[in-house]
Length: 336
Image (cartoon, rainbow, N blue to C red; front, side):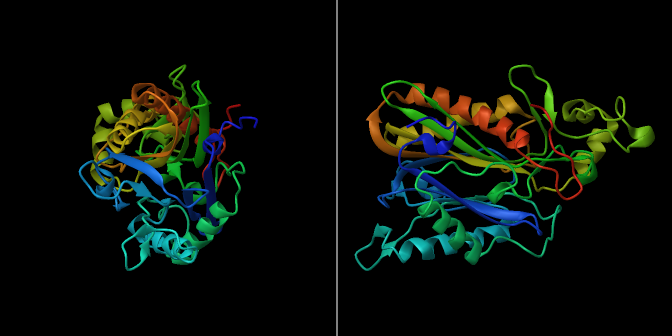
């Protein structure tokens, strides 16, 4: 099968999106085609996370496999969408066998998109159900990019306020690392900071100077550069009033056969890709959370898988801003 440079290049991984394009919010579901579950780990590094059922993914906990992962907008309200994913999987008899019933295990992470569209509309159980059905019916099809699913209301570069920010979205990438082992990533990018090209260090999308008048940094149309702004008085004042509503959330998937401990290591190493492309990353205003998922079909070394997990995360983040379209009055990246 020809590689599409998406997370669904990992055999057996499916992705489904659902969104409200008018309210600018949505959710995304990642799952395995056979309902057998995915060995999973997680690494959460931002200071303002919104998550569900992440503790069970750490070592020394009973459950090793998850049946889906939900990425959603809507801030903490969006965690409700996971109950719709559970209902969809329960209808198909998918879940952890407790003896009394099969309970679908659906960890989730959310991002804050309430400031861009309609803050009264958030991903709910119905939207989660639709995203799960879309994933189950996807048959490995290439997932949507940009303003879809959890990326529908995503933005970046917000140190100078939402009016100076830029539209981002959801992005994906993959790589084959030999022996039939594939590593892919899917990221919803809603960072406080700027997104940069890791090859050049140039800002692709971030805080803009347009319309700032005497407070402007550089020339009209140029990026303010969040790190530079943070050095001065304006940056310190901005941090004092900035909302605690930013984050990059996503998942790395592979067909490598690894242990639960090793999957947590892959999730940890994957954050290196986030740090290469988001400047600054892992702030107290972000809830950066990455899941690691495995179908467990091929032998591989955890250090190799983790190294390339960071690579595909970096490329997926760049893809997220380059695939985004203008929305909510904000421009999007026009780089080729």
